[in-house]
Every structure is written in structure tokens, then in C-alpha cells.
Image (cartoon, rainbow over all chains, first blue to last red; front, side, top):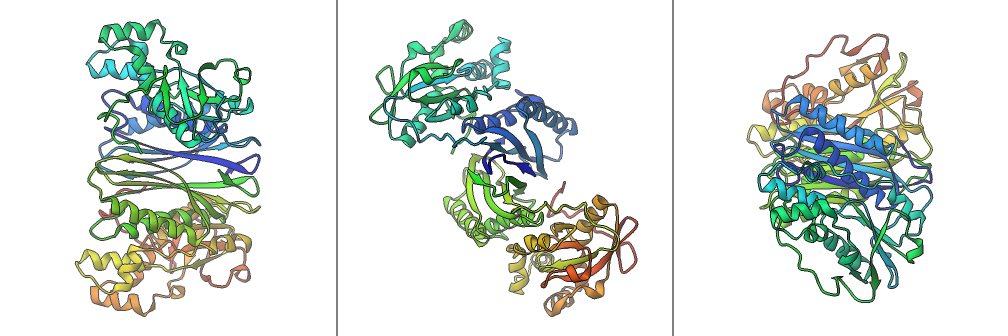
Length: 281
Length: 281
């Protein structure tokens, strides 16, 4: 039984399928446990709610080592504990395909939920959390490298800014989402839901020396990881004014009349099918 | 966002995996949709709560016909509508194995949740809903028959007594669960959780002429389907006295000191591994 302080609860659900969302040769059971918890906890936080309770369905092959499930669960629990949420239910079944279904519930603490649909022309766009690191780590792993360790760790275990979701809601965020598919793509959903145009300036995105280094080594413009890389689970939100943006957030653009997302004044070409991630709905 | 009238919400989650929990050659998309909704709705009802909101994760092969997903969803929605619950969220992903993950939330309406742990010596055991029909239908299908239609329909689409869960809670049920794995097995969980012995009398179970006929045709004692067949999702509960048992429920036994389940005074041999249903956790 879950208590919902103000009589309202937000709920979100996500599937992780082996081969589409993770690979056991690239990620440990604990890595997958952290990722499964993190992406649902941040979904709840992105609505401005505090995650309270999670349910997990685990469909696993008959030959899955018991230790894998135990390590997965321990890491999942530990990630939930970071935000004070608890695992309250679950189901286990056999399946040829290792699949993890997570549902997370959250408490709005009396606030209205923040959706993708509230951005208004004149608002500012702001970001908190790491961006591009998971994509850089995936690029490194995809080319068969095993370093630098920091970007690989970022791919294996996101560190989303959970607490910033409720903070943004309290500060009057008009729309919010986490960056799970890539900044431009996720902002595109906000633009469509809010019927506005979001205008991002790359000069305001901090690539940082680490991703610059990895970009040089792989001959990739690291800015592309920031604009199109998913799975870091940064939070991006719109606020009525620059002065309402909480500390720890960076203004990266503005909301205007129109549609879609402009990057430095132009449409940004999105990548096509990403075979590793599989389909996204 | 889900409203929880009294500030408390119950939540339950279940996985359906193709090959383990359903077969597309035996069940239509609509059948699977009904089953996926029904088993979660009744889980909520068995806690004495009214189902309010559901979330669905659908992991599907690339070649799954769009019509399959549409028919699944329409039937799922229609089953939820029977109890006034709504689909509030979901996720879709690609997977080699068709997998459906359902989470259901329910409103306790100010009552305490009914668990498996509250049965007391002196209570009566009572049942509502159909028992043994799904197992009879499965037996018919397994032998390659396509009739009688009523038991096959019962296997494909359970008709759980949703409304009786909250009714039982209001009438003071001390423990409750739905029969998803078989009466004896599910009562075994109640006996263990409550630290009591449950004593069932088969003379109080109504086999009925339909299952008698099927039993004769397949040379099976139909009582076995009532005692060990799952998936009809009948509700079984304990009540302090026979007079507190609501109309529409049948007293089938008593609670005593001790442990486990007695059927007509003796332990009942449970079946071993059921290859169709796969593992159960």
C-alpha cells in the first residue's frame, strides 16, 4: 500500500529488453538494476513529483544465474533508496528474452503535475544534469574500447538529478521532461505538446574537456552527443523568466512562437534508426 | 495522474509472456487483452480496493501485426471500463518475445487493505466466482478439441467477480486472494501467511453439469479442475462468521489451528510442473 499525501499519485512505466536496452556483456546486473530504477525515478521527478514506490516485473530465461537477479535487485533497491522510494511489488516469470518492466509511483506533495504541454512563448529553456556522457560511453564501447572509464561508467549507470524535478516544479516550471532519447528529440516532444518553438543555443551547452577528448579520439564532434545522445536522464524544463530558474540549472535557450526545435537558428538533423536501442514508442 | 480518494493506493503488477502465459494460436489478441486486464484488476479487487488506473508495457516482435496490438488494446480498455478503471500510461518496445507487463492501481475507499495474512481460527472460508472452467478449457484445447465452446471461452477470457472484492472487504473479510494458481495452492499461501490451517469440504464445491460432462468426455475427475485449476480468478476469502459472508459467496470450509490446507480432512496432492504455464514465482 502506497501513501499519497495529497490524494494524487503520478505513475510511469518502462520496459528494458535485453538486446534493445542493455547487453549483459556490456553491463553488469548491478548496472542494469541502477538503469532500470533510474529511468523510472527520473520520469516521476520530471513531473515534479517525489518517487515513493516501485513495482518490478522480471521475465527471465531459465538459465539466468540467480546471482544476476540478486545483484540486479540489490542495485535497484539501492538506487531507489537514494530518493527514499521503496520496492512494493513484483512478478517473476520465465521468458526466452530477459525483460524488465518497471512502474514507479510518485507523490506530488500538493503541487500540480508538470507536463510537456505548458511551455509558453517568452519562457526560457533550462537544463540540469549531465548530457552526452552516456552517448560518448556507448560510442567508446561500440568501437571496442574500454576507456575512458568515466564515460563508460556514465553509459552503464546514469546519475540523474532526481531532486531537481520537484525543485523545478516549486520554482514554477511550465514544462519539463528528462532527456532519454536525446535533447533535440525530447525537446521536440515538448514543442509539439506545448505548440511552441524551442530555440537552443549551442554556445550555452558546456561540452567540457572530457567529452572534447573522447570526441577527438573517436573523430566525432562531441556536441552531437549532447544534442542527440539519450540515457543520461538530464532534466530540461521551461520557466517563465530567467530569474525563476533554480540554481544548478543552466539556461540554454528560449521559447518562441512556431513549432519544432531550432539549434542556433536552424533545424537540427536527427540521426536515423539506432540499431542498438531498438524501437522507441 | 491518479486520484486516490483517501490518500492511499494499492498497486499490483503482472507479466504475461507468450508461450508461458498465452499462445497466439489458442487465444486472439482480444482474448489476451481481456486476460491481461482481468488478472490485474482482480488482484486489486482481492485487496478490497476498487481498480482505478492501469499502465501497460508491451514488448513485441518487429513482425507483430499492428492489428494485433490494436485489438489487444481495445479489449484491454473494454475490460477496464467494466470496473471504471482507465489506462493512464504505457511503454512500447521491440523484443523477440511478445511480453505484456501490466500494473494496476486501486483505491481503498477508506478501508484497510485485505491481505492474505488475517485469517483466524474459527473463521469460515468462502468463495465467489467460477472455478475449474479455465482448467477444463485448457484440458480440452490441449487434447486438440475445439468444443465445448463455453469452457474454451472460459479459458480464453476469465470473468472475475471484480465487485465482490470491495464487498467482501466491507463485510469484514479477514483475508482474501484470487484463485490464479489453483484453489488448494492459493489457499496454501493464505494458510502460510496467516499461520492457520484451512479445511475445505468438497461437498460444498459445486462442480455443475457442464464440467461433469467435460470430465466424463476426457476421463478426468472434474473436481480436480476446481481444486487445482488456475486462471478463473474466483475470489476466496475468510470471514469471522458465516453470517458475515455476503450473498453470492459460498462457504466452502473453516479455518482452524495448524498449518496448510486440508481437503476433506486430508492433504491434497498438488500437480507437479505444468509445462504450459511455465514458472511461477
